Image 1 (cartoon, rainbow, N blue to C red):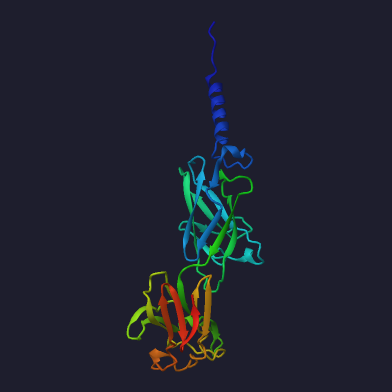
Image 2: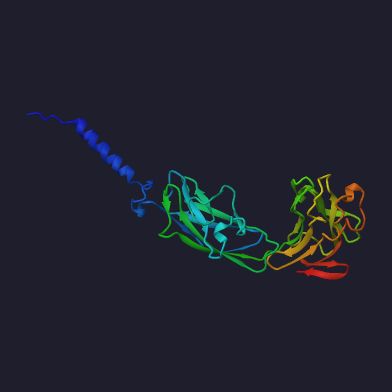
Length: 317
């Protein structure tokens, strides 16, 4: 006797089994599914050191490639008061290109790391910002933890890291003058709309070797070997008030110049006593007197930068 086979029933059964297996695959975003069936992220090193102004790469590895991107967060979990309210940049570093700042549901300053599909090896890049006011080493406590769809995981609790931001090698001269002021009509303005310049001259003051003209603050920065041994002049200049409304709550441009090797030494000189002719303006308005140009002597010897003012050493590092 011939038996009839119910193909419709068998096909439905096979389809159901395939659906169940697919839902349990390693790309499942079901948080309750066993984590050992998802790709796991590990880091080659968890004790990190970077100089101010430099970039490091943190190699991380997924134990197998995924067919879709894997999302993680790198959080800054410092215990210092107020750190939770700061941005990544305020804490001293930035992420490499392609990373997305944000909290991503975190209670800490964080940015998202996206590892592309079909990738097992990936570098997380961090750049330590130069802080001209800092002295010594700053240590940040980091945690790398899964985010988004959780297509990949870390071990329970995430990957703990320490990042030591150590003093850098660059010499920096920075001219700062920004502040909010009020004019006679009660309107507010920024001093950054006024034009100040920062120049590096040869020792005789005959030739401009380098300059910063279009930023606020203006800054000159030199890595070891950038400036040959010799004598130079660093000259901040009150160039113009640019015809901006005059302040009623300031009697001088609130300018200062800072000389620094970030993390090692820093010196700031107040320039406001010299730049107090607000109404008549600066060099562009025909007031190129002795006060519009402020002169600092610079001597460079084997990457030791010595800054003097009227023959008196004010910075050496």
